Length: 98
Image (tube, rainbow, N blue to C red; front, top):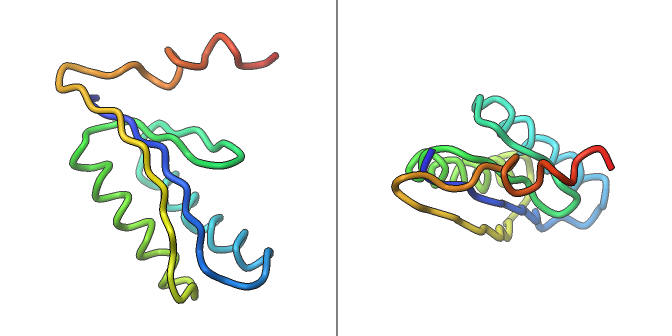
């Protein structure tokens, strides 16, 4: 694992429930990748190989449009280190279950 990303998708739709439905489709896709991920209130964090994660970001955008959004804004943070990055658990494990 040489990268982690945090992605937030904001489909351009008028209804809040429609936004939630589309975001749920994106999260279902992220779950289907088999990568370790954590859903947060503003973004979802995944860890894996940089190339695979970048392809996942592209697919998240496509999913939003295919689900009915005329457009989508995506905010992405990337941590990359060829010999390995800190895991999600390394960064936040001590704060879980508080």
